[in-house]
Length: 305
Image (cartoon, rainbow, N blue to C red):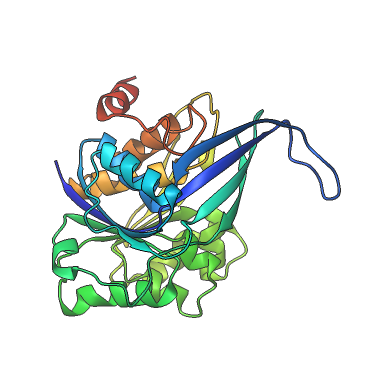
């Protein structure tokens, strides 16, 4: 069992099941409405807990009934919630448009209470974990936390999903991203981060920027096509696993959990990405970001197959 800390987002998801995505000005039929726990960091934390890890989650939720329910749910998943704090106002929520035929989705986020710079942190405890996942929307907090290891804990291993870093369009996003030990994101996110136009340019540009930076690996996901991994001296491609996808919501968060699990065990990147691909594929079997997150035995069985 590894000890993993996750700092970032908890939210509540409402999924609208659509027969199809409507074009602009058109309509679509809602066949079902589903409620489920969510939030990128919470999804990753639950995935890690089901894989058998000891997980501490640091986040902020609203002082409302939704927050009460989420806190109870996370504790029931075996996650250490002692560092989750409450704030006045609503908990963050998302409305997810799910196309039932393909499992593809569009997310509409309503920001409520979120963690930010100025909130209290037990840095010594959080950074004593084997891996620390940083995935928040607050730009000053991300900058502060990624700067700390260079001065206080150079041995800490930081994993950074780049979704919010890219979405915020931060002017020094590349410099911040390369403070992590490992970053994970979709191809389009890496294109936006690096200011590139072609996916084929990502590998060489990442390797060009690695010398002198802390970054040891960048992993570029591509859904059903698998992923690519890039280190200073190597590049590789890892295929995905076939699965009858019902809902891809949270698959990227499940993939990040697989990478964190592998980082804690210092697996070679081909093995790490293969493990993460299996976790992500299995996570798409049911509606909701957390419903189908697999146990370690399920992942091992898929890998054996």
